[in-house]
Length: 365
Image (cartoon, rainbow, N blue to C red):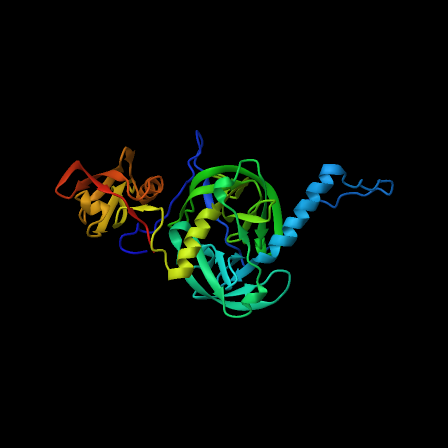
């Protein structure tokens, strides 16, 4: 990110679940090796059992529709491997561009792409990444014509209750498909684990999302990609994934960011607000966060307009209390560039909070 961008920090505990301990979210990058164990004894069989009846009427039609969607869209979902992880990607265009999660790519500059339904592999270079939205674009170096671009839907049209399929390579099981529904829309979730990403307008789904699904496709029954699966909630205080709670980056965000990365190699403007500082969590003697210590301020930025200088500590944004960088990032995710904001801060010379206003800028890479 540029100096006007927000520092990359850990964002724990989002989303904030009402009247519950915050659920912890984990990115669904792949693990190199999957270990399998039988979940129970072998089910007993009876020679007198009757064959299952054939699906009838609407059930048969729905099954056929599932099969059609898988047949049409799965060829657009590839496996991506780096030296440290394996994930998924979606073919974006006929030039061989593939969109995936930034955390799947990591710091790699070159990755291996395995095409669907086969063992054919090719090398791809990284065109660009945008960590705040956890998106990246890579481009294959050969045989681009053999890849099938996916069709991306308008995610504003996504409705709660829609049937969806998640396609990817969970646990190294290539070309896998799970199914569920859209559970909610408009979620704001943070990835945690040191990631700077906070996904706004995320699509919540009950379709199982496992390690390796990251960067794959969340697909409607019209053969369209509505989102990129990225996160799954974890049970608070217990570890392990919370069943049926996964999140995907909406397709509108994917098209916006991917288009800029393909055109310029970086994001020049996003709908993510920024105040133009670099900073770190300020803590008291007991280690509890008390605000965001400002390390530097970009000239002309929101923070500069508000009178903030290096060494100040941000303690509030509008009416929201800020105790750490995660708080600040989440608060900014709720705002839009161009809007006015009031920043509350303390200075080295005085513990009395000051307030200043400024116009929010746009986050860029």
